[in-house]
Length: 320
Image (cartoon, rainbow, N blue to C red; front, side, top):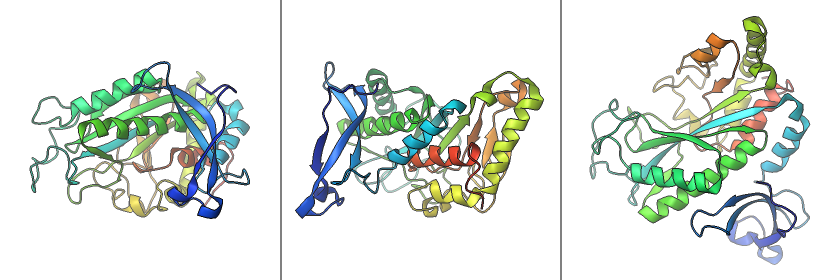
């Protein structure tokens, strides 16, 4: 929920987070969304905030500020998002959780959506995170074991506009907080293990009201094809926006292998998990629905990703 006006603005020491100088350190915390606290429980709350500098301009890393303004401008399109957050559980030694000490488990294959103590590593952690999200009111709607052992995924959505990134950020916070209780860490690194192992993405599902409406295959394909063409023509722009290091992190993941497309070129296809953009088979069959952009890295900024998609698909900006 969005906080009411009874929650005051606050401030914090920006010099401790390298966001300001010690001689002018206080930065503003502006409440923007509120969740129930699953750790100290009701009536306590967790409050998501935007950060403003001393002059009340957005801090350099406050990507929510421009995203919110853009989402307000395109609200008539009713942009919906769902984001699939992949992550890997690590022990305190930095080695994947429950992997043999100094070694490797069996090759990929039996771990995806698996069950069994020899295949699903860390389910108690995953389910504790899921329950925490449900209690908090995060729009979480699924979780599953991923292809690499100790790698998992949760899905957040469907959310409209700015709500998407707000809920994903809170879900990430809760993940790291739950991991503390188990003495493990979670990494969003796009390629935490070198070699023949899958990386971690944050696949982003997107639709507009026009894409979701019943209007026949011809109308649907026109909307979908227009969006895909715009994404194709702005491929390099999106690659730069889809991880915190302007594409450098994703280079390790988007190789054309391990269910990814090559970072060098754009592709799209129905039911193709080796494409940059996938159209789910059921969507193609029904003639309405959404597209899945598979390029965002696991450590992406969801405000940046959703803003980039809206700028390209709805405003026609960012052609290469």
